[in-house]
Length: 599
Image (tube, rainbow, N blue to C red; front, side, top):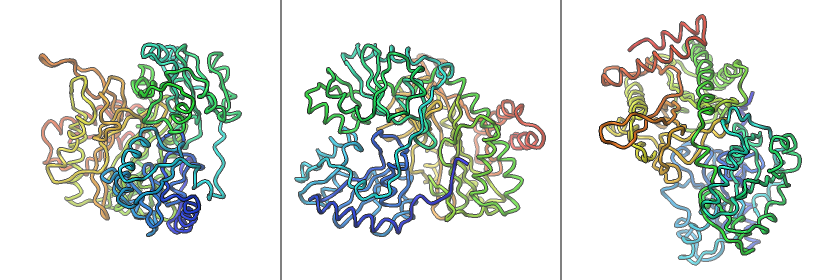
């Protein structure tokens, strides 16, 4: 299996590691040290050798950081992880709600003078600039240093050594040479000589390559320099690019990763860096060598987000294939769950096998979230042998999962009734469903950003005094990262402010979570498309659904729906039968038709 069920860490491991870190801090004269989730590539997911936050604290979420002081260790997490963090860290660590509590003011409240250490490979230029501004007012210094966690992590795993491989240009819809030429033209227009690329998915997209360095996300860990003449330098660990040299061609030079910083010293500016993703050490080296720097967004980010017709066609096919696998799984679940005897791990294993049976699965797109009953309220719950709950008949079961296929990346959530459920669960489910319908039906003018649409999905919940502590949707890559920027249905500035463009793929996933009782989330992927203008309005956009899997009708309070909502559900289910039905046969086909019967 791709997914395993061992606990990555346990709370009792944290205190002795924390004590060792504080001893090293004291020896270096540091009042604090920062331990982020991030690695040098600033991706959401990290290799085992870079899982410093989990190793130190026990917290395994995909976002967060720890600020270690002599007498306090704050673990900062957002709304997705506030239940999870309390279960994973020892009492010596203090959970801190973030971003409500910003790191800078928090440090100023708990320190008076002195230096806070940080690894300049693991923090972005933007993070460091903002934090230095905050600390300066309190007489605190932010001091770059070697990584203190690495100094005490005696059995740290080796870096991943999997080789890179080529991604078919027919699936990408554009050759790597054409992409380099297009972006080089944009650099020349902006007056930039070089762009520093540090995001692995940007480099993967630009060069039409993929890798296996990060579980679930087919990205190659490397750095690159794109020059204004369209040539490129790729910096990778020895041997990792051996299989793609012919694919890269003569205009892409492959160099050792240890040559990356030295290469920065020889550049003629202006050199473009993205302060939101570029490690601080890159800016430091450029500044030390007098290289003029321009702060602009990574030039690959927006082009990558706007999928080519070939990528949209591939993603459409991937979702049909994945949808058929999901329907076979849901049929199996309906046959087995009501009798009892299943556990969360049983469900995860079965779902992965149905995807494997397609013969096209490259990996799952993230560890499947399978939460029965109260575990469904843990937004990013990952089942382990220690937490494996039975799937009790009648409890809600939340399953959030996806697959990585060569032609596309999928991500789908369904909340399922495993037996009769109460009126409260149905009422909450129906409001979540109404939110998904409302956003899926949205039409909006060009220039609208995801933050402008986020509240549409929340409104039915707000009307009942309910809400959820995560964004309504994230961008999704094309056989790349399942979480992709810059677009998103969210109020978070990092992703919610990007205007939506035709070709962008996003999730629509409102939810509701009642701690200790149940969790509900529904998720489809959509692609932004042009829509006919209405009246005198400027050009309009809408969202085309990519995901075709039944919504559990047993959980819908039909009387609470409007006529338009009922029509949307019936039309969605009719389209699901039309698209997925030909891919099923026998009992699974019969199940699909029953599950998609009109309300």
